[in-house]
Amino acid sequence: MITLYDYELSGNCYKVRLALNILKVPFTARPMDFHPAREHKSDWFLKLNPLGQLPVIDDDGLVLREAQAILVYLASRYDSSGHWYPRHDAAALGRISQWLGFAQELTATAGAARLHDTLFLDVDIGKCRAGAHTLLRILDEHLWFAEQAGEKWLCGADRPSIADLACFPYVMLSEEGGISRLPYPAIRRWGDRVKRLPGFIPMPGIFPAAAA
Image (cartoon, rainbow, N blue to C red; front, side, top):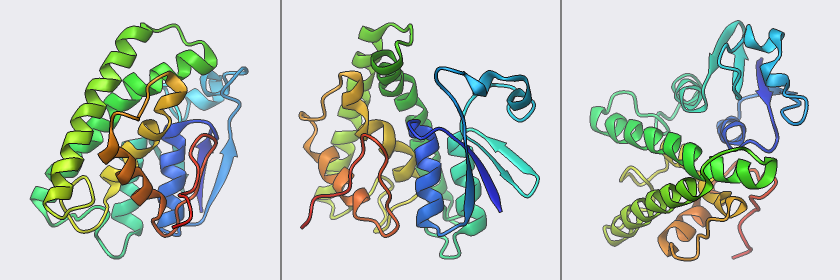
């Protein structure tokens, strides 16, 4: 049984919960008092993750940190269809890895802006918001051209991949950091498609898709 060291309001923890639910993998969530107690910086947790960051999973003794790495592991081990992380398609893996790196940049910009506005994280908020808008423009343009080619997902396939799950949370939570999604219609359409995936679950700030 997987144990997920989890914080309900974390976009990175949410993407792991979302993947587990979509893949129908049983797990136990171990809630962490991220704020104000900073349990993720406690001595016992630093033995699990010396970086003091969430999420972390423990899958019968295999301890993994870093949300994107966890998504790769979960899809590789538990997705019998092989489409969430197509291990034998080098081009697809390259594209997925590219967007996993993009997801890290979203965390560092839109995610940091959100922490500034909600938990008063000391960051250069102007730089974070400007960086987030640059990323959203890139993402929106990519999705728009994909739609013109009849594709719905980030990596050009007819199915979503872990790249979509990795990028989704901090895009959808961007407005909590003062970053509007109104200028990005292709992103809004993509977000709605993700919300309609079988097994989708919401989190505070990310709501189910409206009824069709």
